[in-house]
Image (cartoon, rainbow, N blue to C red; front, side, top):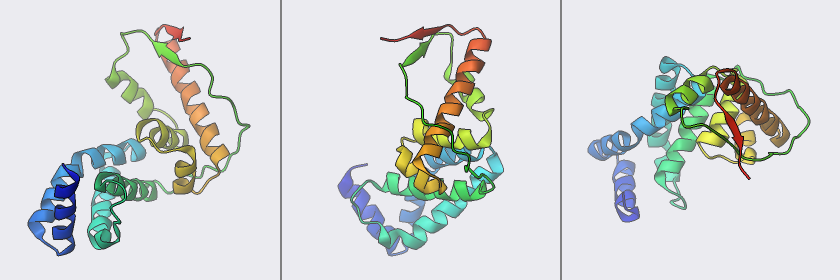
Length: 180
């Protein structure tokens, strides 16, 4: 959607135009549900987060400044709603900071579906951080602010998640190759 169309749609939504609100919801619901599901790892919680998120979107749309895209603004709200659904997560354990290391690739037999399933098997704390940073594109600073933790905790949880995934992939026979 072009920026000008987006602005017109947002203005209509602010005026409580139900058709415009439906259009905005339809445009973003699938992507936002996926985001919520990756964080909650539960269909019902993801649906709840999606519903709560869009309620907040429509109740606060006049606060959208338009500096970024409406999609990124909605995503931040839905992420917060999903995090609220899994608010029992306490990422308080601080582990020493590690370097990112060399990029790693795996053989072509690895599918997105298999990787997605392995990500869902991660412990809640590191799964949430992994998804926020590696899938949703948040920075460590942004993830830490959303979760109410330090940047170091965010980094350590991401490192932990990557180690678990690496072990799972290696144990299932996927060949790891260092890229240089």
